[in-house]
Image (cartoon, rainbow, N blue to C red; front, side, top):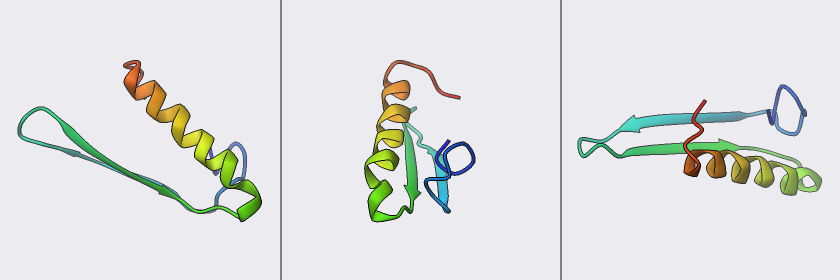
Length: 57
């Protein structure tokens, strides 16, 4: 979303690592111009809210 749909970030990446106890570690980062930081942060918040609601795509 951040890069391909909105063009808000040149670099957006994530990693998912399963843990033995059934949990997982999700690492994500993105760059942005100062004027676009609010949009990029909002994108991250939307994804995390989806995780909380059980929507993992």
